[in-house]
Amino acid sequence: MTELWHPLQFSSPKFGVPSRRPHVAPLLQGHGQIHLLRNTPAVKTSATARAPEAAGGKMVVELVGAFNELTERMNVLSTCSSRILFKALKISIPILQQLPLSPDGRSPLSRALSLALLLANLQMDAEVISASILREVLEAGLISIHEVRDQIGIGTAHLLHESLRMKNMPSRIDVLDDESATALRKFCLTYYDIRAIILELALKLDMMRHLDYLPRFRQQKLSLEVMRIHAPLAHAVGTNYLSLELQDLSFRYLFPYSYLYVDAWLRSHEAGSKPLIDIYKEQLLQSLKADSTLVDLVNDVSVKGRYKSRYSTMKKLVKDGRELEEVNDILGLRVIVKPKSGVDMSELGEKACYRAREIIQSMWKEMPHRTKDYIAKPKANGYRSLHMAVNVSEDGRTRPLMEIQIRTTEMDLLAAGGTASHSLYKGGVTDLEEVSTLLFF
Image 1 (cartoon, rainbow, N blue to C red):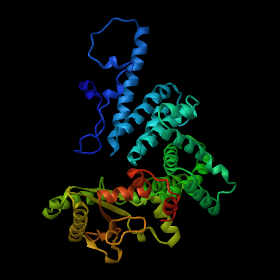
Image 2 (cartoon, rainbow, N blue to C red):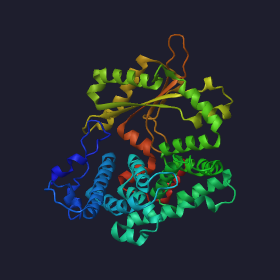
Image 3 (tube, one colour):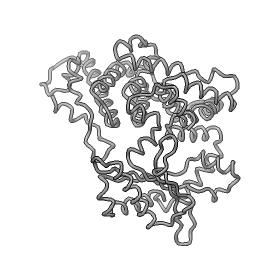
Image 4 (cartoon, rainbow, N blue to C red):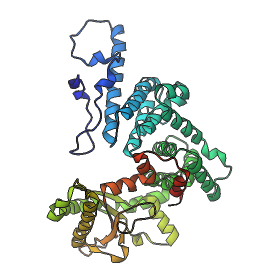
């Protein structure tokens, strides 16, 4: 049956990396509609008879496509995990296809898969992702927690139960001030499963990305809750990617004119039709790949670029009383090196990071007072990376300093997902003392 699935393969976002997902054919054996994909001779049937087959065929395409797309993004996936994920999709997709459009105009299936992909990108495990897929079905009253426990597993059922407990969390307090918001965040970190917290944060981010359909007062109420509770909570559990986007989206709805002012200024740092950050990214990547010393140390090197978040830029303007032109690190690059395999991978990775820093020093003028070596002296939470700032002004035109971070793939996993997801990646977080550490790093 191997050749059956080739037309349904989804392209991998990991360039040049073969897919590590399990083969889906064994999981589909016994499915009532699988014959629709076989090259069987055409049989004359009535339109009424063909309708269920067509619907079933569409469901199979959706099922396999979603499974492939999710597993492409998950770095670690056991056979047990793949079965949990597949069962959740198999149960949910037929139900979600029948539900009416959501208030934001999206189909429930689209909403569920968007949330699942977001969590897959964060390298969450199959139980968290399956819970995100089933959440919409559960809230529609078409499946119960007990049925999820019996058909999928107790882990997924537990996460669904925990995430539903967190849903009305802001209603626990009457006044959303700093003190009550801080107390609520501490309560969550102490008494909720940390994976359920990340699931709830991903739900909030998906919601914030689609708020335009709501009246303005509702947008601002939800944005204030996210800014006070969820964005700091995302930072506390180490999911910085979620935290930054939650802050920016909340800022956009709470202070739209300030947001547009900062956004327009950040967008002005472009050269012609090409963003300035892309130009620097390409220059640096070319120099890194051309260096023979670095090539001997690594299997791969990549460079990511970003502009400073709108919220953090405005915060510096307000807090420090700066002008826009005085805000540094508007531009940022991140170099990620993948050391060659071997017993001394960690040592090779560190050497590669320091070599990359030497290459950057040869390209731009380093600002020594901004250099920080978190490889030699890691942060208390285990964060390791090289930080530096360089002056990219040229041809008499002054530009903001560009911040550059250099790290290995392992260091990046810890930094991107935080101590929480890194621990989950290794086997789970259940110790309350560790949760407390997460809160205060």
